[in-house]
Length: 211
Image (cartoon, rainbow, N blue to C red; front, top):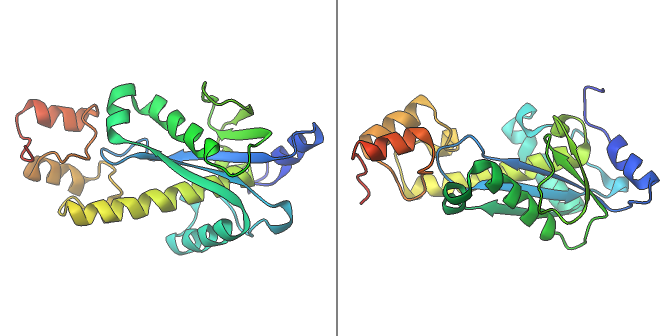
């Protein structure tokens, strides 16, 4: 396995006649609030941005620059599953729902989908393969991870302005010390995931100050 993602999974699919290959990844399974976000990307093999990698391994500046390049050179779609959907069907199924929406939102139907992780979403109506740690192995999945993270981080910055004090512009909704303290002091907001234990526990203690 190479240290950086490459185009070998895509080439293998194309050699089997599956010419249009999309990579799909999600971000936001761990946060206590906000949607889970997925992106699907079909790269142009002649215009693959240099330096694609797992979004977690890139600096914020590099990630933003690559996201701009991906949006300019590839076919892509970003989609979400809402807090209400996460609470209704659980985060695992909601992340797969967001992935299916991202693939469905592409302006071309892919012949094959490379999915980050060890499971293929059951409602994905395409030929697909699951790739463990795919965002560090496939450039298409890496590109999807970058777009998903950029989109969700920006969304959390917007939500931080609507609900100040939780530090979402810094922590993206993850259960950091400052976020957990704010949850205790300020209460649960409408965009918190009520099915997640720290939020659920506070609601049970009657500390929901948002009404």
